[in-house]
Image (cartoon, rainbow, N blue to C red; front, side, top):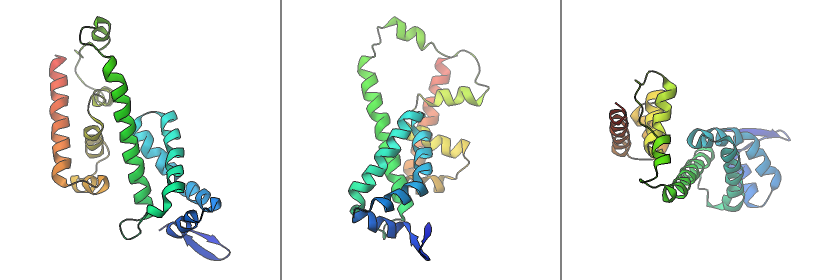
Length: 187
C-alpha cells in the first residue's frame, strides 16, 4: 500500500482519496505524484502515442477529482481502480479513433490500396511483428503482447484485465488467427 509521511503519520492512497472527496487539492497532487507515471505508462502502452497518453493521464486525474466518491476500497485497491479506469479510457480512445478513420476508407480507393500493399518479405524482426499487431483490435493486441512479449501467464493477464480466463484465451486465439491471415495475404 502506498503511504506518505505527513507530520509523522503515514497517509495511504485511500486516506488521500477521502481528502480528495472533500476537495483537498493537495491530496490529489500527492496521488498524482505517486501514480501519474504508471497511468501514463499504461495509456502510452495501449495508445502508442505520447501526446494522447499525456492528455489521457490528465483526464484520468480529473476523473479522480470529480468521481473520488465512487471508489470502493472493498472492491479493489486505489491503484488497481485507477489503472482500470486508465485501461478502459485508453481502449475507448482507440475505438473512437478507429471510428473516425473507418468511414473515410473506401475499398475502391487505389491510393489506400497502394499504401497498404501486402507484406511479401518474411517476418523476421520484432519490429515487423509489432507493426502487424497494429492491425488487430486493441483487446486482442493487448492480450497477445502481454502473453508473448511481456511473459505473463494467461491467469495473470485475465486477472489484470478483469476478464474471464476463457475470454482472454479467445482473444489470443482470434488475434493469432487474424495475424496468420494477414501473413498469408502477404505471401
